[in-house]
Image (cartoon, helix red, strand yellow):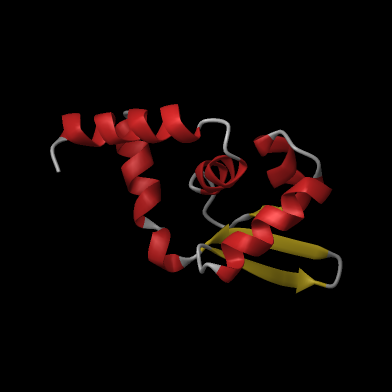
Length: 96
């Protein structure tokens, strides 16, 4: 894909889904290598942790996210390895 097409696609996705919580979750997770805790992800997405649970569960069942528990009290949420390409795509579209 050309650079212009990548930018156009990203602008379209953002215009259509900019207030879509699952899209905001995915965008937040593309910026983190090791994943985010539920509390930090909720802060970055701008919703309460309780609200986030439903969306995380749905995205996890769809295979988009992975949830790891490094300890009983901590959950790390990150993109599934199949979607790592989004990090590069979103980074390039923003000129990073």
